[in-house]
Length: 395
Figure (cartoon, rainbow, N blue to C red):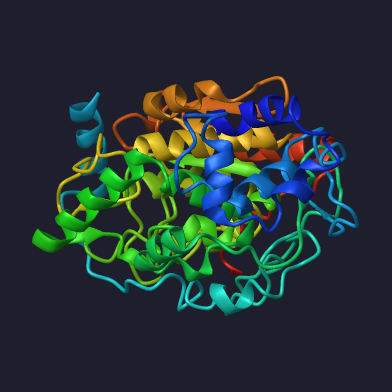
């Protein structure tokens, strides 16, 4: 995204802002690349006309200056070892067998459901009561409400063939359109090619969690423009049937891991929710709670085994993108790794809540009693945004 920020300055000096989109629109890809690369040598060959147009449409303050004639009308929408020990404690050293699907096929339904988006940009009709309005007290973010509002451009987003093919390898047909320009840009970078090769080789010789079609679950269930809260985890659970692409979450029918038990205990004490019968957090995700792990894959039985493969670079860029392009988001950073990763969050326009990790090894050192859930809702309400319904029994 650093290249993106440089483009308006370099290109704006050469072309009038009102004619630049018209100039680049419809130009053959090879011609576009030849024109852009001398101006910005760091631009990848996979950088396309679509990416440039998307940038000019969404860059704060640049939409008017770079608007093409009769633009589409936008709609407003709401240390390795220590970490390994912590994750091992969370799994109890046991492989828990359970379903690999997320919430009785909620994610499998996300691809067709995303064509029927709610006014707030949320995904509707996800299945079995897991839409943005599921559960008592749930309320989608009102259009344009408060500081958390962002611009969502209507219509399907077409990706370059190379990035479309790469996404398909992860079963990411359900990834929400609002994430696709960002994902395409990251997947075109050299580090992601190495990361993909690493994960592919790992899957060829061992069992890797979560399954490929669950790696980007968070990007399927939580549209970029609907994010209200970010809960940052570490790496996926490494027991069979546990990981589903949402930080701390496990599918229904799978035993609730110790860290999640502590999260639910704090939730009950803080906001008075009843103890749920499951640990499936899709109900939070469809309300705008972005459940992101720092590392998105792991080898079976080996916590932290995919650290330093490249996922950290990717998820750091995700956090930076949210911080830069959104406002009024609550970041819950539990444990030192999450807090280091969240250091780039702009605290002048977001709320950052920090506490020890909810693992049994550290929860009693300050996580229990932190009251992050009530603080998050109080901040959202003050910002004019609907609070999160944290209950899970009705989900």
